[in-house]
Length: 335
Image 1 (spheres, helix red, strand yellow):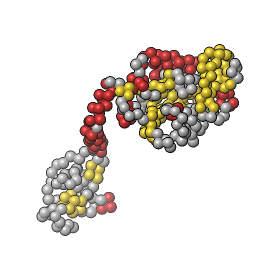
Image 2 (cartoon, helix red, strand yellow):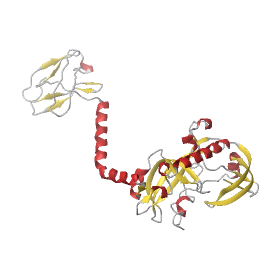
Image 3 (spheres, one colour):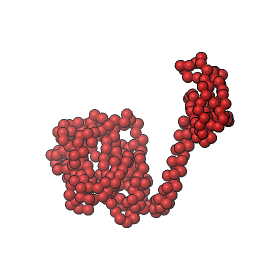
Image 4 (cartoon, one colour):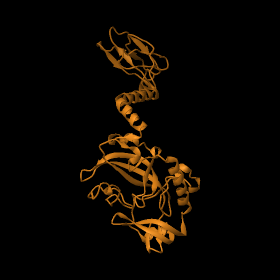
């Protein structure tokens, strides 16, 4: 057949993996007859669509029939594979991000060199899987967690804060693995020292090596206390009452038994950020309270498949800073 004469017509007559076939019709058409297995044609598309090697010029339903096409100009052109095209697009995206955030990157670099940060750049301070230093909400002792994600939020009382979703290593008596924890940083208007934040990357702690060594030892002790143990204990403990941790001094024999602890306290849950709670002080609302998300599901320990005996120092510093048990002297359950 002879196609109608048009200013510019582009048609596809075949495909192969990573390649496409393009035929440009323009000007005075010439007649060519193609048969399957006979044609190896490369076509120029004048910048519209990159074309490539034609290996099949006949439809499956017309294998033995002639196929007529009009082609004016022919030229060898290369067509990038999907992988090569994806790499080029990714490079374009990276370069765009670098160019767009050039001023932000310079400002952030200058702040980090001085171990300072502004509230609007907290998102850049915390990176996924970063080890974050904070303190235990019940005892106030040092601890570390692993940062997963974060975002800016606002409470019902219009208090803005940066919300951090983190995880740490725990054992519920049956499953050894990771469980979630929420942290928050209230909005501030001036530049602050990173180490003065309620939670910050461990690398910015002024005594990070000493803190890490201490938490590694605490992690080893935590692993050694998995199971049921009878011990003499002197120190601080806490228990939850109306969503708030109540701190108590302990100097007596204790029984560490996670399974029995949860059986005796089936509704026990650690505090989570309560965005509906009233702000009684500057930061007391930030960590403590019970909200609709404080369920057994949120405190559930999920196995990571790692054996406690195979944990390295980077894993040990993420262990829970407390173990649940019963104080014989105080006659109460606590951590």
